[in-house]
Image (cartoon, helix red, strand yellow):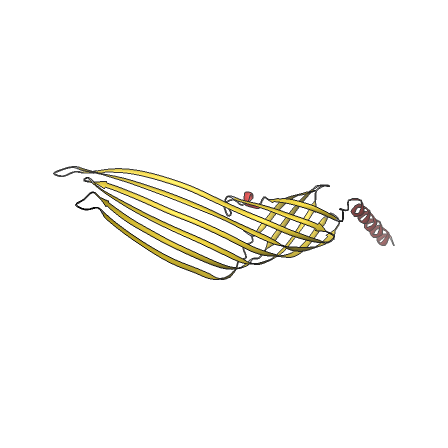
Amino acid sequence: LLALTAGWILFASITATAQKDSLPASYHELALDVAPIITRVYSPNVSSFLYRYHCGNGAIRARIDVSLNNSTNTSNGTSTAGGGIPTTDTNTNNYKYNYSAFTIRAGYQHSYNAGKARFYMGLDGIFSYAMSDNTTTSSRTASGTETVNTSEYKTTTIGFGLAPVAGVQYRMGRYFTLGIEEYIPVLYSDGKTTNTSSETVTPGIQNTITNSKTDGTNKGWNLTFNPVNNLSIYIGFKF
């Protein structure tokens, strides 16, 4: 009897609190994913924003992920060879890397409320685009002859697919929520690669220029499950 009474009092208290803190029938939510900041070693330079329109136990959702990475590096060296006529070799290496990518996800989720906690499952459609450009230039000058080698490797990838999502969010107050979400993307990707190289020798008897170009493609379906990269820890604002 005491256990039943205590259980009834606890249930009534939770129900009253949930009703007191209940959310409106519909509202907007904007969230920032902080997982890439915490796990930057795995997902560098990524910004992710999530928008949801909640209506009852359902929500229409849209998310955009943007990733940028640019780096350059230059190294110089000089060497002198002895002998009858000492010669000096000068070497310069330039490295440049550019990477940009964005992913758009849009879908629907259904929630199961438990007081201030909300569990949900849903499905997103995905469109992604990624581009990388890796260029290396090296020059060597020896005995009045300069040799310049340039190599450029470009990739462009477009993908689309579906991603089941599941997560939980907890209301920290009237306007703020804290949530965790995991998704498993199934993507079809179409990638193109271009590898270009050239060599220029001057002055010599005659300037010599040698060029080569190789193109390639990479298409197919892939299923990616990475608990770290696919994990979102977001802070949401209700308005």
